[in-house]
View 1 (cartoon, rainbow, N blue to C red):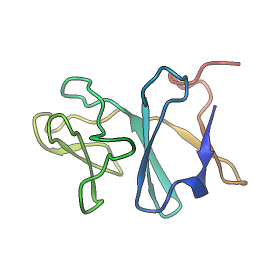
View 2 (cartoon, rainbow, N blue to C red):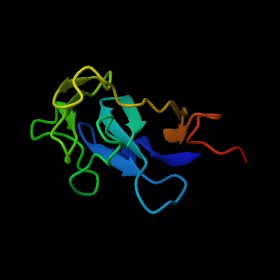
View 3 (cartoon, one colour):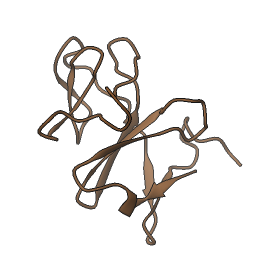
View 4 (cartoon, rainbow, N blue to C red):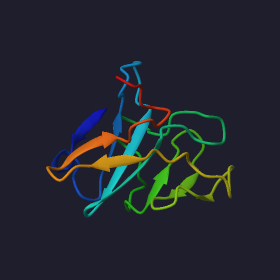
Length: 116
């Protein structure tokens, strides 16, 4: 399932996606150079959405993913909580495929992907 083209994700920024059109973002993606890190948009503390506003998943420095509800901070590359009420827990990774043409897709057969 296509999410976007990599050029639609600015370097150092985050973006939420609603791939199954459920009415809220269920996947968050952070771009660092040519690398993308994707996670379920749900804090492990209480399974709440992470962004404080649309596509706002990062702290002011852009160095951590932050849960707006609880203030927990997560390492971008690993999803591990490094500060906050769910210390030591991790975000749920979402595997992506980045095609040679720059198209970004959910990996086939991922639980967030529905077979077509």
